[in-house]
Length: 383
Length: 254
Image (cartoon, rainbow over all chains, first blue to last red; front, side, top):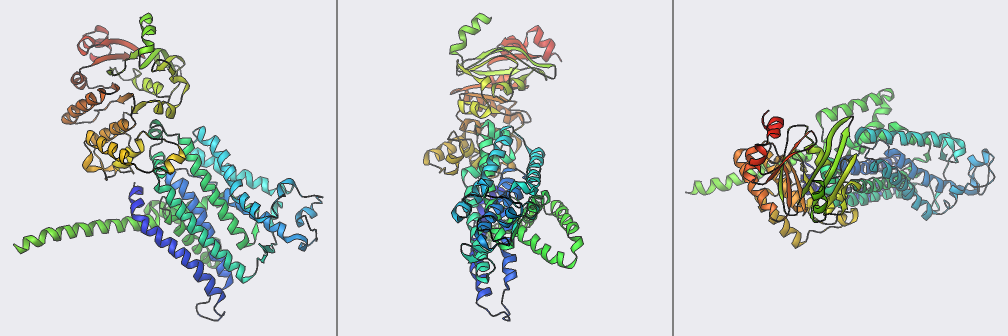
């Protein structure tokens, strides 16, 4: 309903969020590296990585918002694209270990030596080069989304059916990646990373740099998605969301419109996963868990779908809450999360950001009306 | 009858011959045949379930016929194409229930409908040109919505939504317009104005109007086709059709 008004009103909001993110990209590393550990404003390294992780989640939620908030495609499989990007980065990090693994094999990662493999599988070739891995981070999720979307959108699979097959997709990948002979480390996934681009991955400076990279990437993707949704293409996306057959009878190829958004969104999710893995130090098949994708939907709903800023706020709020909550009452977290989703759906259908900006817009409109009254009232008083 | 139809086919704008379609054994269209000439304004009447909406679904590519031919401009086979292709060929459709993009402004609704390249990349890099702006302004005044251009379509009245949808059809620059019950739920004044609007539109393109409102059809003063049970019952002027015994029995008499 209010999406097109948000287009106009959120401009300042987007600028503010981009400025905050860029500010954080400088401030958090600075507070971590330049202050002494006992300084009151010191940010410990574990927090730098934790905040960095939140930002990658925020990027994943932003990616989901592009398809769910603007095109009505409720993907319940976005964590799969995130995990695939993460695996691509994980493979690069594994190859960087070189001969420093437990088995000291210069070419094969430990788990392959353990499985008695003699040579590197073909799909591990090239991952020793960062540029190649970086390319795969966007290409693999993008290609999967393209092929999946091609069939789903062409067959006009919509609504809840689409959501179910996206769940099936992530579940199928979960099962596949669990198998040892898939060649991705099975159950244990990929871990024990040493270096990234020649820098020690555990080093305080590397952690700070990864945080800064996450913040800058999130800011760039926010600008990119804003440009997309503000273009005429973005208006077509919303048109598809609100009246798909009307859009089709106007002559738009709805399947192409959806496919583009879905593919771009999957690529963004892949980048998020690639930034996530070096900061948490592990990637395993658990990331494909169907529940993970549903959590992304909750973050987006809490923040406000179709607002771009909302998912970022939602991801940070919910995950911040999760970190605090799970420390205090670990067994109740899922109840709290479920309760939160029900609460937001019932009482804040536009999410936190949607509700706040609707309130601000209303107040602004009232203010304008009051000003107009004053203008009318004053000359009359003068008479 | 069939002889004359095959002779008129090359000159016709829309040509349906022997079109049948059934859903779960129910024959929605039963060997339906008729022809629309270029520049013609035609009214189609008929009782509920006569197949009026199914006929539109077939012409616009939403439904495939079981048998029969549907040709546009003499030689374009519509049964082989999908909705988007048919729309881009120049056939516009207005739904029974007004369907506009409620969360877009009236201006954006028309901008989206405007007959420009509709691919992903052309829309992504689209810039509103002076020509496009002028065309939208022109349509806004045709459908009498100039003053509301920046309002959300959701805030329009029912009648205004119908007009906005007709305006969107105009922006599409179709050669053939299919209009399903344009005056349903309109006041008498709005109905009269809609008749004027449609007649104005029909000066430059062909229009097929499906309508129940006999007063409205009389106001249009055009050739009428009466459908019943999926085929043509009678065709001619409104007076001719409404005095036809079968039409009275099947439709008007009820």
